[in-house]
Length: 449
Image (cartoon, rainbow, N blue to C red; front, side, top):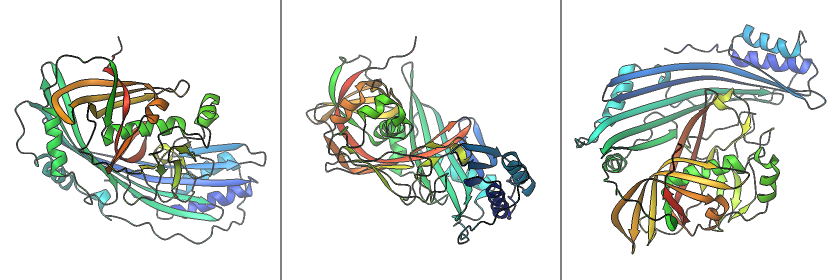
């Protein structure tokens, strides 16, 4: 079971800020987190629950010359915080600091969430695994997963003392089937912020995961050339996520080639597209009430009808985020939202390919080169599927040219939650996007030799 954090932790954080200001620093900020993670999973080999806890605090100061220093501790006790302060401020005395109004207690979606017994967690996962009872004999591997990140975050600085609780939940179902000598992997995932039972995978999503795994892939290849393409929301999310993190941040703008090509006011994408980063969106997996520098959450428009109008910035400008809330601060997205379009998702390309199942997107900021790998491409002719499905396809070319080719967005949107790790610490974000239509050069996926 998780270890409880000292209920007086906010008092220790205030004392830390007071001593840092007493040492003469121009600014002082303490970010602290108590984070619990529990993962329950069932597959063909068995079932299990894994639990972990990470506590930490980042003390950040800026001197009169503008030099920034940080110190990190994993001890949220009074002695642990005091020892961290001593590294930066020595034996300084506390200064008088006004922290403003005391914060209200953060809302708790489920007060006993951190203490749910293994049996209850596995019961939820088992119920998910059993919802598709007609599993084909060709399915050689099945798995269901429930993953919960539960973090309480404090941000204390002169004039500010705030706290938030962020409960991020993911449910996923995986199916793997053989297609000749090739394993075909398909997954249905839903991620949100809130209570453990607030959302669930739909039956259509579960059936689609099985059906996609059982697809019979066309053995022959097609001609490498430019085609009309449609990106399903998961593939579109992969492209948007990598493009924003690589090109539309203050750190990316410090590269001369990026600053020259993507200056504020530049038209880089089709005028159909408006892109907003909105951490305030209800239930958004990547959302928050304040960022990891303590700045209140607010929507930020990055692209307005094809024109760059904003960037993600740290240094107190609203998008400073730390992996796991304790890693190195970086400008990073929270919940990216692409405004929907006008066509029905069923009305995709007339002649071309529908790309599904993201395997990875790579963008070179210097050259604008992009490689988008997908699990499968459905061929369409005269507005209908031909029945030919090609596995392991990639779209290659220039990202700017691809974005300029976008000529349609669906009315329907889907929210995709992403969780990866940097230096062992998690990064959470989400992308809400419609289907996108455009053009690009398709070819069989190249593999390293």
